[in-house]
Length: 243
Image (cartoon, rainbow, N blue to C red; front, top):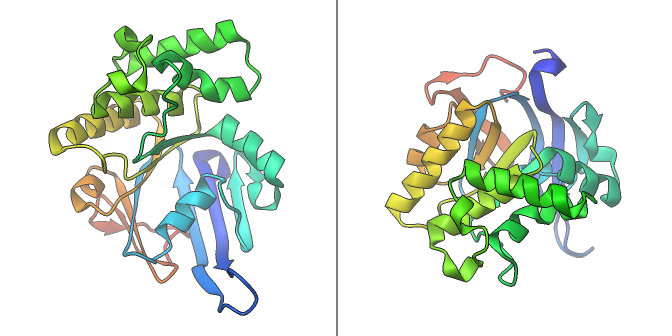
């Protein structure tokens, strides 16, 4: 697959953790190849210790590989220092977490605008873009509220708006409905479906097969390797991403 058709490519990535010299090394990833086409809705699954959180952290530039390459926007981010990685996160990536991670002292609009503040964007433009994305997630009437005044579903929609405000290349979601009841979780997943239909690339870590079934591709990890790589949960991917 041509690089211009991909939003990201992971090549031979390993990740080894060692807490201290006397401790045995932990091989979280053992040589992963993964091509992520632009606009794909991908689910990462696997048992505890399989490497799925490590893979998500590397895709999200929250960690770097021990070995291998990670091409994002044409750049090998595996070789970047912390300052460069922070710049890449702000420009290319949006994050949605199970715990929402909203700042309680800020209004909804101010929470959504936080990523733009760190990019040095002027206040007027930050507010305009935050208002526009809150309209997109149907929370324009809650802009002046604070997180404590919102329901769980509304807080997660604020978190999604914050993840979208920088117009990311990839939206990363880590168990995004884990703190929500089933009905509210279904509403959030419906929003992800809409965002995917609009062409957004989404990577979601989940343990829930029902959530994975909504994705067009499912990657299952085991012992730091890709064990299964399926499109539609039925047929294997015929590319270098299969291991």
